[in-house]
Amino acid sequence: MTSQILNYNELEIKQLASEIITKGYAILHDQELSQRELVEVSQLFGHCESYGYFMNPKDNPEISIVSGQRTEEDKAIGMFGDTELQWHANGSARHHFEEICVSLYCVEECVDTVLSICSQVDCFAELSERDKEKYRNIEIQLDHKMDAIYKISEGDYRELAEGPPAPEAEMGTGADFYKEDIDRRPLVGKHPIDNREYLYFMVPFIVGALRHGEKIDHEVLYDELWEKLFRSKYMVHHVFRRGDLLLMDQLHTIHRRSPVHNLERQLWRTAFDYSNIKFK
Image 1 (cartoon, rainbow, N blue to C red):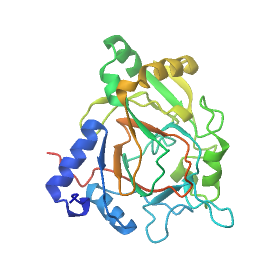
Image 2: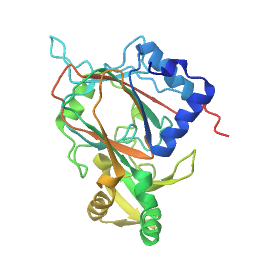
Image 3: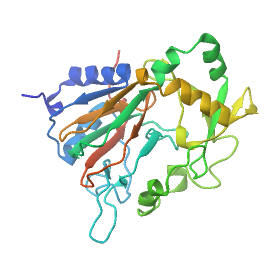
Image 4: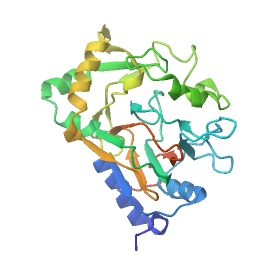
């Protein structure tokens, strides 16, 4: 019988958290979770983000429904629709976020859809010392707009637009939010738990780059990073089956998704931090 995460003790949750941070992800199979139970499991790790969008169930706003399914009135029930999603991470459109772990729980599967995970921390560890030092001195500018280097599709935004807007400061949008002094972050970060350095290559949102405070050609940087990071040796791939629970660290990894063929496919997503885990 498959071990259920609902029955994990404190030590087992800590060991699972350590696995997520070390590998960048962990996968549990044949889990049996209600929405409330998924939230409770996530809260064992730490604080869960909670919003009031159309894809957040009113009784469990910590959950975001990920689905291409639509109602009879042609309204989306979840975010992201059914199209391919380029490399991204939860929170990547924001410059500061605490909920760096994401869970995805499969309620309805599509065996033709593949999720790919790429390790930003393993890639950085294998760079030459010269490249490491160069990248440590680079800041990237991020913006949540259609004309970033990667042209994110209209469909990716349409579904989010159907929900009620959140305060601009909360979502990190609006002309007043993006200013020269706050819309940038280091290209190389240190993970707050294990202190390993990782690349923060947020593909859809890079609109500029600076080295030692001077602007550089961010398109050249983009092409260079793409070539170094997205190599098969840094990737794993997963096809969700009903009951799968995938947990990913959103600093050590970045992920993408192929198109969805079964529009009934549905995942429940939560995002949380590690604040309840005593690692030492």
